[in-house]
Image (cartoon, rainbow, N blue to C red; front, side, top):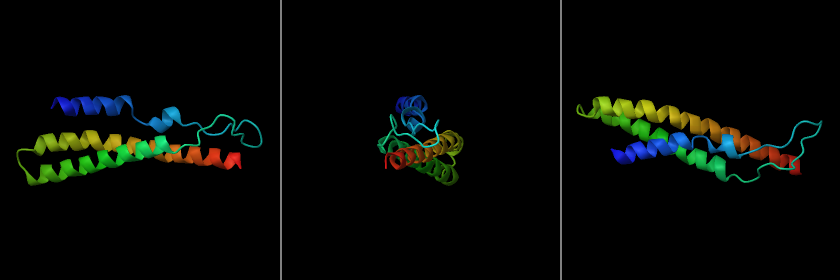
Length: 108
Protein backbone atom coordinates (compact mmCIF):
# COMPACT_ATOMS: atom_id res chain seq x y z
CA UNK A 1 0.00 0.00 0.00
CA UNK A 2 2.88 2.34 0.75
CA UNK A 3 4.24 1.85 -2.77
CA UNK A 4 0.90 2.88 -4.25
CA UNK A 5 0.82 6.05 -2.17
CA UNK A 6 4.40 6.93 -3.13
CA UNK A 7 3.68 6.25 -6.80
CA UNK A 8 0.56 8.43 -6.75
CA UNK A 9 2.45 11.22 -4.97
CA UNK A 10 5.13 11.05 -7.66
CA UNK A 11 2.54 11.20 -10.43
CA UNK A 12 0.75 14.16 -8.87
CA UNK A 13 3.99 16.05 -8.26
CA UNK A 14 5.31 15.47 -11.77
CA UNK A 15 2.09 15.51 -13.74
CA UNK A 16 2.28 16.98 -17.18
CA UNK A 17 6.00 17.38 -17.75
CA UNK A 18 5.27 18.88 -21.16
CA UNK A 19 3.29 21.71 -19.55
CA UNK A 20 6.27 22.62 -17.37
CA UNK A 21 9.35 21.87 -19.44
CA UNK A 22 8.42 22.14 -23.13
CA UNK A 23 8.40 25.60 -24.70
CA UNK A 24 7.21 26.50 -28.17
CA UNK A 25 8.70 29.18 -30.40
CA UNK A 26 8.32 32.89 -29.66
CA UNK A 27 5.17 34.00 -31.49
CA UNK A 28 5.16 37.70 -30.62
CA UNK A 29 6.23 38.82 -34.10
CA UNK A 30 4.71 38.07 -37.48
CA UNK A 31 6.98 35.01 -37.90
CA UNK A 32 7.63 32.47 -35.08
CA UNK A 33 11.23 32.67 -33.81
CA UNK A 34 12.85 29.49 -32.53
CA UNK A 35 15.33 31.19 -30.23
CA UNK A 36 14.81 29.27 -27.00
CA UNK A 37 12.25 26.57 -27.66
CA UNK A 38 12.29 22.83 -27.05
CA UNK A 39 13.19 20.53 -29.93
CA UNK A 40 13.43 17.28 -27.95
CA UNK A 41 10.43 14.96 -27.78
CA UNK A 42 11.61 13.40 -24.49
CA UNK A 43 9.06 15.09 -22.21
CA UNK A 44 6.04 14.47 -24.45
CA UNK A 45 7.07 10.81 -24.77
CA UNK A 46 7.42 10.60 -20.98
CA UNK A 47 3.90 12.01 -20.60
CA UNK A 48 2.60 9.53 -23.17
CA UNK A 49 4.16 6.58 -21.30
CA UNK A 50 2.64 7.72 -18.00
CA UNK A 51 -0.73 8.23 -19.71
CA UNK A 52 -0.65 4.72 -21.16
CA UNK A 53 0.34 3.17 -17.82
CA UNK A 54 -2.34 5.02 -15.88
CA UNK A 55 -5.11 4.30 -18.37
CA UNK A 56 -4.10 0.63 -18.54
CA UNK A 57 -4.02 0.47 -14.75
CA UNK A 58 -7.43 2.12 -14.50
CA UNK A 59 -8.94 -0.28 -17.02
CA UNK A 60 -7.32 -3.19 -15.20
CA UNK A 61 -8.79 -1.95 -11.92
CA UNK A 62 -12.25 -1.74 -13.48
CA UNK A 63 -11.96 -5.28 -14.85
CA UNK A 64 -10.71 -6.58 -11.50
CA UNK A 65 -13.52 -4.82 -9.65
CA UNK A 66 -16.11 -6.43 -11.95
CA UNK A 67 -14.61 -9.93 -11.61
CA UNK A 68 -13.88 -9.96 -7.89
CA UNK A 69 -16.35 -9.07 -5.19
CA UNK A 70 -13.58 -8.40 -2.65
CA UNK A 71 -11.88 -5.80 -4.87
CA UNK A 72 -15.09 -3.94 -5.71
CA UNK A 73 -14.66 -0.69 -3.78
CA UNK A 74 -10.88 -0.61 -4.00
CA UNK A 75 -10.86 -1.32 -7.73
CA UNK A 76 -13.38 1.43 -8.39
CA UNK A 77 -11.37 3.88 -6.28
CA UNK A 78 -8.19 2.97 -8.15
CA UNK A 79 -9.91 3.45 -11.50
CA UNK A 80 -11.39 6.77 -10.42
CA UNK A 81 -7.95 8.03 -9.42
CA UNK A 82 -5.96 6.59 -12.34
CA UNK A 83 -8.12 7.50 -15.32
CA UNK A 84 -8.21 11.29 -14.76
CA UNK A 85 -4.44 11.36 -14.22
CA UNK A 86 -4.00 9.34 -17.40
CA UNK A 87 -6.16 11.82 -19.29
CA UNK A 88 -4.12 14.71 -17.88
CA UNK A 89 -0.86 13.12 -19.01
CA UNK A 90 -2.35 12.40 -22.44
CA UNK A 91 -3.37 16.04 -22.85
CA UNK A 92 0.09 17.17 -21.70
CA UNK A 93 1.66 14.84 -24.25
CA UNK A 94 -0.44 16.25 -27.10
CA UNK A 95 0.42 19.81 -26.06
CA UNK A 96 4.11 18.90 -25.80
CA UNK A 97 4.23 17.27 -29.23
CA UNK A 98 2.47 20.33 -30.69
CA UNK A 99 4.97 22.74 -29.10
CA UNK A 100 7.95 20.66 -30.25
CA UNK A 101 6.53 20.46 -33.76
CA UNK A 102 6.00 24.22 -33.87
CA UNK A 103 9.55 24.77 -32.66
CA UNK A 104 11.01 22.44 -35.26
CA UNK A 105 8.97 24.12 -38.00
CA UNK A 106 10.16 27.56 -36.87
CA UNK A 107 13.78 26.44 -37.16
CA UNK A 108 13.43 25.60 -40.85
